[in-house]
Amino acid sequence: MRPQRGLYYAREFTQAFKVSRRERAVRRVLVIGDGAREHAIAWALERSGAVVGALASHVNPGLEGVARRTGGRLFLGKVTDPGLAVKAAEEFSPELVIVGPEEPLFSGVADALRERGFRVIGASKRLALIEMRKDFARSLQWKYRIPGRLIYRVFKSAEEAREYSKYLGAVAIKPVRQAGGKGVRVLHGDVRYLDLDDAYRRSVEDVLKHVLQYGDADGAVLVEEAVWGVEFTIQALSDGETLFFFPPVQDNPHAYEFGVGPECGGMGSISPLPFLEPEEVEESRRAVEASVRALQSETGERYVGVVSGQMMLTARGPVIIEYYSRLGDPEAVNALYLYEGDAYELFSLAADGKLHKAEQRFKSEFTIVKAVAPVGYPLKRDLARGRRVHVDWNAVRKAGCLVFFASVEERGGAYVTLGSRALEILAAGASPREAYERVERCVSAVDGDGVFYRRDIGSPEYMLAMAAAAEKARRVYKWRRARGLGGRVLVWEPGAGVTEYSL
Image (cartoon, rainbow, N blue to C red; front, side):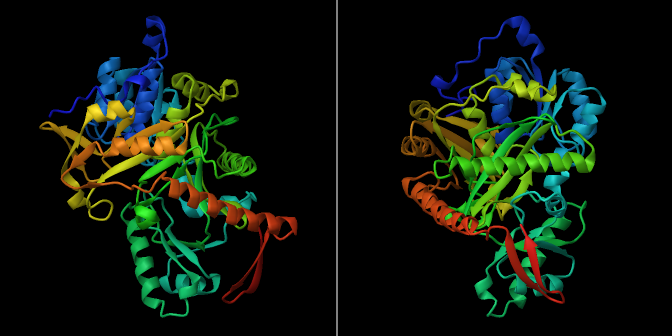
């Protein structure tokens, strides 16, 4: 059965904002990027009555559908090419350009567009360093005393990294450059009594592979203390002065159920998070805001775009694992669905430095997003390409879900995978259980010649486990803080003896 490209959203979600034809004519937006995040941005803009164009590296069926329905246009080409982005913008003449993924930001796409006079939502190349370079982000945290920082060192030598890791205990070994959420290795302290030489060597070699493939970063790894707890993401839109926060969301970066397997772009997300206390969310927001202030002081540039803190609630309280210089994927899907206002107006206020006028209006619903990926993802991209995916749109409409297209194209009556996550499916409900039951019905409407998803995300058992883990961390950090022990850590380092860190 031929896919019905116009039916990627359920009927009850199609009520667009009433915008006059004259106002609609000036609401022209160019979205740069081609994943489910960019499809979600385009979907939100369509509901705002905007004419939506997109620059994409492939024909994303969702973006193509939005462009066709709104009278926009789909441009095909390399999304990291600043010149091509400027050319597309000059042809489309948008009132606003929104850069979705991180790699175009790293390559200066937002800078090139601003230089040509376009209003842009997207961090400059220098500001995007907070995501691109983990060593830069960590040094910024320590220089400006940003709360939630971790102890770390950067090494080019595998032997030096191994020696430092032995004394730090449990460590996370990461590429110094952002690598699409991949390349991280965690080594537990309790295995240091075994022969670790081979484990460290292989871990460092794997991490270096992810760094060197980009060609724009030194061959170095970041070794930092590993922490445990409950992960969550704080996403905010910034105009350089005001931060507009979306509800906290939890991503699931591991490919397989129960949080095991290799890290990937993200297999699902939930929002809001009932297992976090309001004070923990507020503390995390203050850390993200302090990071933006520090970054602007360091660079002398105004941050206009999205900034996100990948957080973890630990026995020390909320800590910052890493930063995004954009909306997460799939976290963006939750955020844009939950936002109850006019998306075009919200982004415009940010571009104009007037974000203080934006209203915090969010739906009182619970959302779950699940990614459907081809077998082979994320480690064997060749096996993950060319798999056919079918969607039972009648079942999707009946369950009341949204489907966002990612790394697929429509060919010969089916969707064909391009090597990464294929679809992201969102369901909303009055409770986590209702949203979970709905999203499971929708995911079961997707089949193909080798696709998988994580059944555990958002399940009752999952929610109970997250609540238990959060409470365990909460009891410890509150006990420590009540006794004045929250901000002091002692580490024995080779050649330096005992070092006291004030966190």
